[in-house]
Image 1 (cartoon, rainbow, N blue to C red):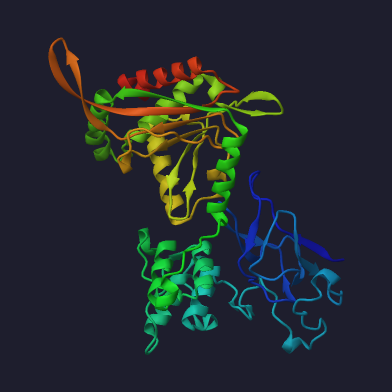
Image 2 (tube, rainbow, N blue to C red; image 1 turned 120 degrees about the vertical axis):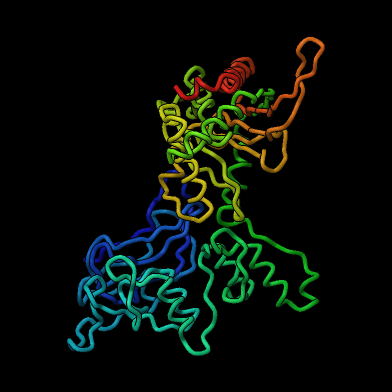
Length: 445
């Protein structure tokens, strides 16, 4: 009996998924947990595995973008005909081939497929194709003998006259841009962290190889992937909510002094040192305990207050904005918040976040201080009712009698949904955050 393979639903907010490539040729016998395809969503890249045994046959071509639940393939029994939905694609090999010519079962040790050795990562297969490396001839150095990208790059570098190493980190969106622009990723100079190829790197390479006439043409950037999702959600956020922004100045002298003291003591003990943003996240989470209406969502004509305080921290990426979430931030000590925020930021920039790292946010902190911004109006993340904006830490002056005293301040701004909260409670929340930052020892309790 044919088993349908459906595009998985990865989180409540997932709208579409891009089938990057099929890792298993049509007609290949597979076992449960064998990888069938890498799937790209607006948030993360995941590998989809077979959930049952059978002869795999795709129902759609690679490169298509489909909604969750869409039929993408079949798992068939021996001798079973391919359903009509997949008949137009490449037919599987006859099920009754002689034993010596049958395709080995993917998932058994030592088995090979037409895409290469079984235990090879999707990126290793991709790099091998780009570099012309026979992946079946390699010895894997990854877990369990798995062939990893480094194995392919080493083989390419050792080959006589072989090309240079391929980019270490290339996101699916960048690969799609490169294919659309006709750019060979092997010629692109990466400028991102850890050798990551950015979309701007692809655009720069395309500009170099384009003829003069094409260089004068207007640049068109499709609103797809992460950028398209951001555009859609921010537009919906402004349309569906009654958003209002308030601002307040926070004195940071004590918080800066505390961080300097912690840096001196905690570094020697190997404890993660909090940033100013970490201290603000801690203060924001504790203040939400006193102002739970700001830790809520509006739906079904009602205000739903969340039982947990999960603070999202906006991270700016080349492809767009990503908001990983620090779960139960009000219950974590400052050191744990520092470690978690560092892990999430690094994972966001390298594309290694899990879907669970991006879900469950009930409140958001967004900072533009590193860009020299003092004040801005952040837009509320859909499904929440408030977001805290953080400006740059700057020098200012306060007066003690007639004497000026140098001080350090920053501006906090809160955008809130007026349907859930009025201006006075939102202002009280800001004052609560400011009070905690002025007395930062309370953040260590």
